[in-house]
Image (cartoon, rainbow, N blue to C red; front, side, top):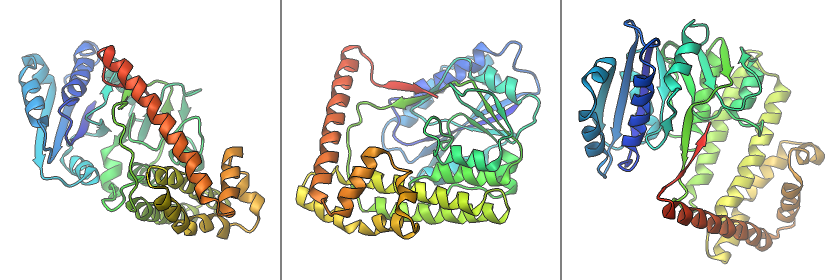
Length: 367
């Protein structure tokens, strides 16, 4: 198996060593019986202009590796100026030399059995993409595009395939179809990449095994609002619509399915924006901002002739908030979301304190 692991790094001095240790350990433990002479594993570290001691940390760790490990794994390091995560991921694709590409965030880690699971499921070279997901009900092979797109968009609340975590991509599919991360999209760029990949790929497979551990940074409690969220949301909606229209043209999804997807995405985007606005501490400014986003609210109504048509996609709480917004009860909405936000942060602080006492920094979510 020929595998390229791409790790973008920006100010991850606290975590990069742990990340690399988990990857190397999985290779070393599963070397015998799994790693063959024809196999090749490269780890591509891309420092995206870090201003902390990330470089010193990974340089120091690499020097400690055993000689036999260095013979198995080819670690390549690139030092770039700060260009953002999308540019960095595209850069990684350009530098990757192997058949398969796997992304790992520098503050996450893999379980010890990661290499064994990947090796066993990719050995027959039957699929253009393999998703590894814990708690998936069954192993699914070659899902229809409509079903796969639904999971990528997160329309099924039980599970989502929108992120890059635990997806094994074929470099040839990416290169042959010029699939890239959009640098101008700062929200949902992973999702768009996965949609582009789904559009252009052949057979897919979802394996009911997981090994990726996503760091849930409990200590990170900063919640802020910026107008860039609205601009980013508009950019994402346009990009998503363009891709869905292409799928309709290719007859891989229906026009009605596209309408439902756009509607549900608009609903999710609107309520996410309400959460963001609740981060504003000044109630007058928050009320003003809630009034300013009326166009986002109207998008939901304008694209649907029947009110019940879009209300059925909201839960009971969302329907109540929707009616409140329709009645311009901005202050009431702000207080509801602000209170939830304060309670949530209080719980996070409590968990962070408990973890500190237990000498742990964060919790990991196993996916």
